[in-house]
Image 1 (tube, one colour):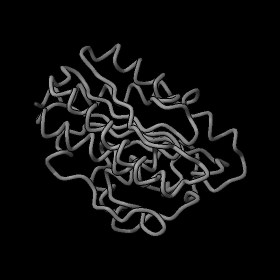
Image 2 (cartoon, helix red, strand yellow; image 1 turned 30 degrees about the vertical axis):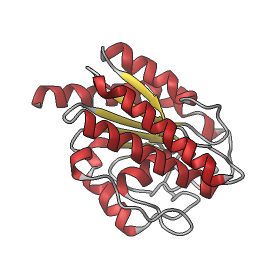
Image 3 (cartoon, one colour; image 1 turned 120 degrees about the horizontal axis):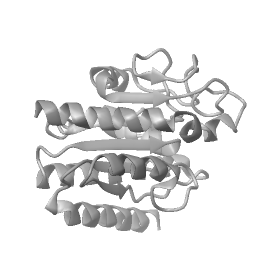
Length: 228
């Protein structure tokens, strides 16, 4: 059943990317929702709507994956496979067009594992995205990542602790190489990204930092457009 579900998920992602061969005139935003959020962009859709309003011609694609809490490891792995497929398909169809990746909670780990490489056991150990694809990724905005690593230059928020799950040293090094394009929000006490005890904190990133995240993504696009 899981194999069938994954096949259908990847087929949906491939179909979505194939449909985007017209290529976005603005940003192509790829979004991975958090655990147990309904299919679609989840709360992150509040941000992508604002970004699209400021970057005309943008498109938003939701990664089609389970976002299951109870089957987290398999779900997260499915998300990585699906996001890789979306990014690779769009990169092949629309080379040079600008991409932003956004993820919340489990979706933040999906985004980080996809961009930087898998977190490692018990999660995936995939390699990060190719240089060709990453050449078009202008912004990666994540919040509440359970594999959050403290004291990175791209960290935002008040957390000084690592997340609930470890991240491989090799993937951390890849993330560092993209530091100017990444922002990762985590606040003190967050039950997942700070290994804390406060579940409420985990749900407050859009309210607290939404404007900052939108400004960052838009600014990254504008800088890339100016230099492209």
